[in-house]
Amino acid sequence: MRRIQSVAGESDASLKGRVRKVLDEHDKLTHKINNRHARDMADRTRTDVRGRIAGIHGRNSLGFMNRGARDIIQARAARATAAAARGSKPAARAQEIYANQLAFTGSGKAAKGSNNIQPGRGNTRPPKPRRRRK
Image: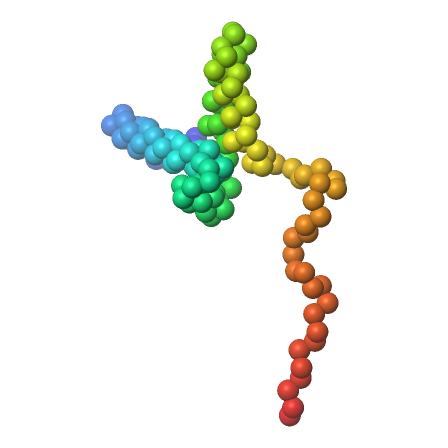
C-alpha cells in the first residue's frame, strides 16, 4: 500500500467513500450467502423435498461457502451457550440443535475403525486393455 501511495500520491476522500460503499455491499452480500448456506446445513436433516434439495446444495457448494455457514452456526451456538449459562432452558435445547447442525462439518478424520469405506477405485487391479492388432 505504501509503495502504491508513494507513486500514485494521496487518494481523494471521495474515492475512499466509494470504495467503502462497495466493500460494505460486498460484506452484506457475503453475509446473505453465508446465511443461505447455514439454512441449507440446518435443513439437510429434513426428510422432505427441502431436505433433499439442501443436501444437494451442500454437496455442490465449495469449502469457503461451508466455512462461512459453519461460522454463522458457531456464532449462534456461542450465543445459546451464553444464554444457557444464565439459566435459559430454550437456549440449552438450542445448543443441542446447533451441535447436530454442525455435525460432519469440522476438519479432521473420523475415529479409527468407525467406518470401513475407503475412497477411491474399488478394483485397484483392473484387467489390462486388449491390444489392437496391427
